[in-house]
Amino acid sequence: MSHHPAQTLAQKLIARAAGRSHVAVGELVTCKVDLAMFHDSSGPRRLKPMLEELGAEIWDKNKVVLVLDHYVPAQDADAQKIIQITRETAKTWQLPHVIDSEGICHVVLPERGHLKPGMLCVGGDSHSPTGGAFGCYMFGIGATEMLGVCTTGQIWLQVPRTLRMHWSGRLQSGVTAKDMMLHMVGRFGMNGGQYQAVEFAGPAVQALSMAERMTLSNMSAEMGAQVGLIAADDTTMQYLQSVGVSSEHLAGAKHWCSDDDADFEEYRFDALVLSPQVAAPHSPANTRDVGAFADVLPNIAYIGACTGAKIDDLRAAASVLKDKHVAQGVQLMVAPASAREQAQATQEGVMQTLMDAGATVLPNSCGACAGYGATFPEGSTVISTTARNFKGRMGPASVNVYLASPYTVAASALRGRITDPREVLA
Amino acid sequence: MTQRAFDNARVWRLGADVDTDALAPGAYMKHGLDVIAQHCLEAVRSDFAQGVREGDVIVAGANFGIGSSREQAAGVLRHLGLAAVIAPSFSGLYFRNAFNLGLLLLTCPQADQIEADERIAVRFDGDRPVVIRACGQRLDCAPIPDFLMDIVDVGGLLPLLRRRKPA
Image (tube, rainbow over all chains, first blue to last red; front, side, top):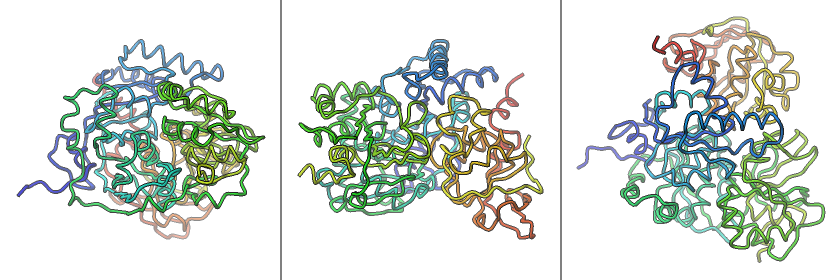
């Protein structure tokens, strides 16, 4: 009989990083950080002055990835200055891993093979739980805490409980991971995760592509969870191989899963009965079935962000808009989450379909989602594939943002009113 | 140096789900705290930025600080001189950021009893903070681990690391 207590995936990942055989829920532990990601807003412009003040250096430059995605392309002189500081600092520090204007951090990180099951990672961005889709304990931190990581290579955390979201069945055509997540955020609320670990499991999760799994993990942030984990399986392994992760790194990757008899707080869902979901202004938790919003007339349809403009999102929108055109008075904007996702979509004819339908294609950056640069004009009604619809985030307080899946956003653009995509796809 | 216990703090009452984008609006994130401070909470409480004074406290509903990792959402309240934020619950990410920037957060299940503009005091019974209302009512808060109080006592993680810096 083993002397090790049964452990959740979260506990196993933390135990490894803390140099322990196992950890108990509630314990405060110090973990070694395997990878630290920061971007142009949270990174050098904040870290450089603090590191200089301390006379300190980054503990291991090979474990750092810098991504320029929030202020690119520059909208004004202030943004240009931030980008310039970021690029100059990357050179001064001789950072080996810099991804400049090629996509959003949470998407380019796995694309370049930086994430491997079993790692403990931090990111200077709240959607860092996206890394959980790859079996990494990855969470978001602020710039000052990143300073702590950069100088010590370590971070403290309190071992969380695990809330296991078990999804049986299979999603209907036209229903996505985004709908699953909006449903869960609606049920548990924006802080329902209580900074614990969420783990997504069950046949409906296993059936998802990596891009779709990333959407689940990504929006764990909207549930207030610290991480959103998914155990590695054959789908994960195929993805990792496709981005050049070596087989020696992959050996043992499937070890990173929860023990069956570990202590979970489990919630069960049936994917088969899930309808497309829409979150009304001004909270991602303000969610109902799409049918409740048939009288809403958006004038902007936005497909963008790490949450909603990956390859599967672009394909979904194109499947709705194939050989069609958006309704008069609706502006469709598409900001593919990375250059590689866009290249893939171009190769498949997906980008052409979207442009033929009337889409304006925007740069591979955070764009309007972060609200740091160009946002939506006063009084707009927006339906968006992004993660947050806080009042004033994506434009003036008068802007109303509805969150939905790429299918629903495309169908709504087509009809000029919020539309159940299953009506259009049928 | 942050004063752990304090008296006679004026209360700003806010509702639940105050998000980071309301505290530090994205449009001003290019700038420093002095600019962000002028727009702090403008989407939800337009008189706050001009009216807040050193030593005031925010008493909010549940889920304070949900949203972004932008620590300016905590830094701006420190910049404006807030003595503490008191709420039944906080975003976990915001909680870490606040202590790292020297902003005291008190998790107080009964915070909703505190009224707008009332004057409160905060005392510490070991690691257990207590809010004392103007009427004398005592509201217990969740204990704060010593290492977090050590950070907030010196004004944040940067001053703490500065102290540890080898001469």
